[in-house]
Amino acid sequence: MNYTITRDYIDVGDSRSGEKLGKVEFLVSHSTGNPGSTAYGNRNYFENADPEASAHTFIDDKYILEIIPLNEKAWHVRYNVPTDNRLFGKDANNNAIGIELCYGGRINFREAYKRYVWYHAYLVDKFNLNISSDIVPHSKLDPSRRTDPGNILRQHGISFNEFLNDVRESYRRDFQGKNTSEPVDTPEPVVKGVSVSLPLDIGDEGDFVREVQEDLIKAGFPLRRYGADGIYGPETQQAVMKFQEKYDLLVDGLVGNQTLTKLNEVLEDGNSETDFPLPDGILRRGDEGNKVRQLQRALQHINFDPKGIDGIYGPKTEDAVRRFQSMYAALKNDGIYGPNTKKFIAKELAD
Ligand SMILES: [Zn+2]
Image 1 (cartoon, rainbow, N blue to C red):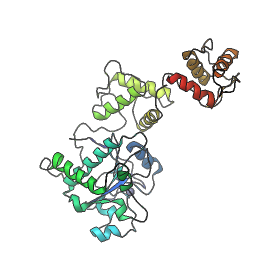
Image 2: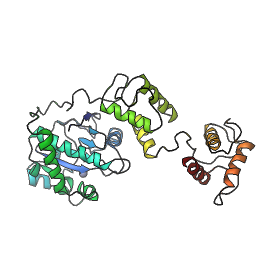
Image 3: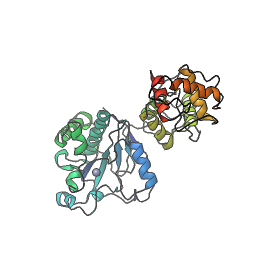
Image 4: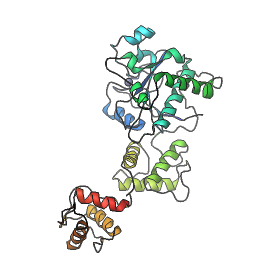
């Protein structure tokens, strides 16, 4: 089993000091404090908010994402906790790699966990570490403030020791005797040529591209000719541009952080009604524009014909809304579109 490691480093700043890490003597296992936030979600946060905290690698069900090079320091354990020095004679920030498990929301825990296990085994192999003694849960270094990652693993019935056993198994199966250890100061992709950097553009290939294609299809942007083939060609670019247009992003056909984040959001929200998105807020007679048009399309689809999709909330649209509302005792029969009416129309669209 081999996963792709994506190396997409944040800029040097408060989160990424650029200072050289000492010899790697241990690994600190974390889980994020931020359920539902993906690897790229975390990367965005560290890149943009640039807090004086960070970790090297964020792992979700799609990415093993190194945001800080493994030969530089990250700030993943408070400096004034003494436990790391007592256990290792070294400070975690100076001599350890920090690895974060992303979980919750739309993240498939099993897939994220497999990658988390594999990546620990990869580092054990890379830095010649001892699994029993050199992998430490964050909670052990900072017990008064932290419970990660045990709190999250336990929710899925996995103790930290069982996690270590899984790392042992992955190490035996995926690494031992297969890789000679690489020099620490020249990080390279595990699967060479597959790891790509953002933004994705025409000509990019690999698993990462395939994942984005699969997401586009799920979000309602079909790739009818080539499907999710892992190649970023013109068809994919067209779909990306349609996606960007629909969600008010810069329409450049490149998949960068904003497009990825939006894609995640859209999939999180569920896309059962992507063909007929319903506007938020309140619409009433006299309103005009795209939101009215969206509403009219939806009404027409469920056979409450507003007599034309013109983007104008006139008497016929009002009447269609009123007719719809009259079907439900829970709705006020006022011809005004609001959150309650939206809920019932959405239900009708989903059936
Ligand atoms: Zn932590």
